[in-house]
Length: 139
Image (cartoon, rainbow, N blue to C red):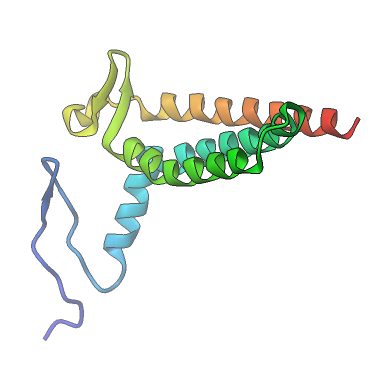
C-alpha cells in the first residue's frame, strides 16, 4: 500500500489543481498560487492603508470633536473589509484592459509581476506617508 494518499486532480476555474497528498503539496501549491495572484501583497497594502487611516482618524476625530463611536465604527469597517480585499485579489486580476476575472486571463498573458511591483510601490508610498503623519503628530 502506498504511504501517501493521492486523489485525482480537481478542476478549479478551468485549471487543474495538483494532486493532494499528506505531504503538504496542496498547501504549498496554494501558497504559491496566492503569491502569484498577489494576495499577500494586497493584504499587506490593505493593512498599511488601514493603519494609516486609523492613525489619521485618531487625530482628526479628536480635532473635530466627534464621538469615540465614529472611530470604533471605522475600526469595524476596516476589519470587515480585509476578507473582501483578500477575496477580491484572489478572484480578479489587473490587466492592461482593466480588471478581469482571474479565470478569464490566459496564463501566458498575465502581468502579475508588473502588478506586484505597483503594489510594492504603493505600500512604500503609504508607509512614507504614515511615517510623516507620525512625525508630525510628535511635533
